Amino acid sequence: MNIKPIKNETDYQSMLEEIEELFEAAPDTPEGDHLEVLVTLIEAYEEKHYSIPKPEPIEAILYHMESRGLTRRDLQPYIGSRARVSEVLNRKRPLTMEMIRNLHRGLGIPAEILIQPYHTDKDAA
Image (tube, rainbow, N blue to C red; front, side, top):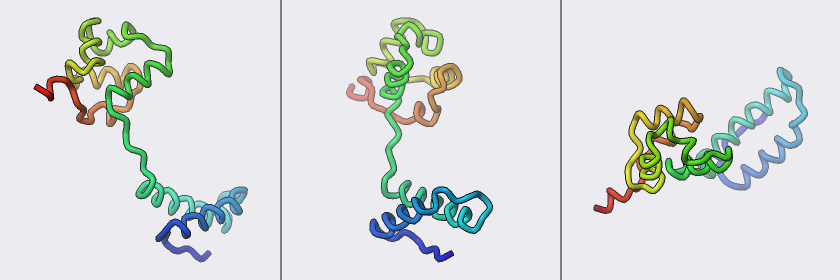
């Protein structure tokens, strides 16, 4: 097993090809172990060079609503009154920790996304 760090795009492409060759390797075999190490190296390289930024909290809520067919009314148990839901989604009011907890527990939106800072109209004042 000859393994070296991924230092550039050429190394990255080479390792992807090697992974493709080993893709059917059985676990707990020398080939399977080699594959596992290569995948770990690829994941680390991709995280560093191709990381995808986390979505902004309100965009994440809107995406969650759209992908699950939810309406603003469906958010009321998690955010509050109809007016409060409107204020939050229109960036007139920031999410509170209680809202974040409720959205996370009730709808499964990751808390690490919801706690990120984001722009509201209050910021402009």
